[in-house]
Length: 176
Image 1 (cartoon, one colour):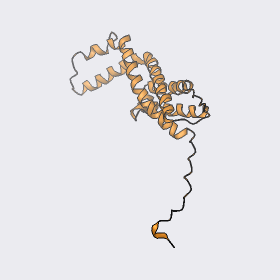
Image 2: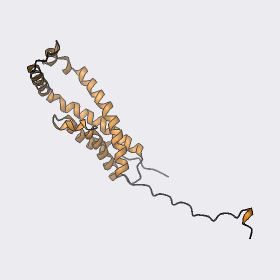
Image 3: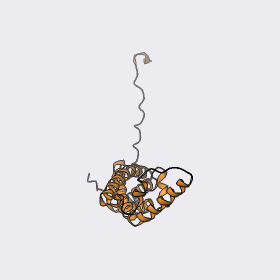
Image 4: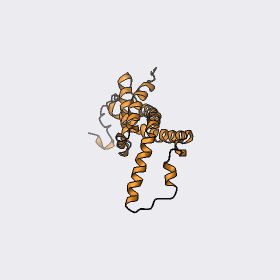
């Protein structure tokens, strides 16, 4: 039997780009607070695309592969989307801290240094660390979404019919 290998990359790129965009935008990204909704949903969408473009049957392993790839693509897209939004996020954090301090809460020393533009959080090292952490988390959640997607959208193998019932063999007490 020559089983054709499914093409994982195209569905992962499409669904990962959409999931990463939704995960990177400021207000819409709150959907990820609900069990990584955008990542799991994107991986399930990738599994649906994979099932649509594959003539054979898919296994949960196929869903896991396409889901992990979708999560990694989404992490790269999130990292790219968040670069131009970084000044907006810092300004928002500054306003939140100002509002909290109005209630008389004392802020930790050095917090202002973290929020100024010369902060080390904008360095390439922090960018790569965040990218790695997002990729790891999104890949795990993508595996979950891919398995769910394959179980929902993939063609099912036909179940083998049970063997026909055979009559019981006559025993020693059945002599008539």
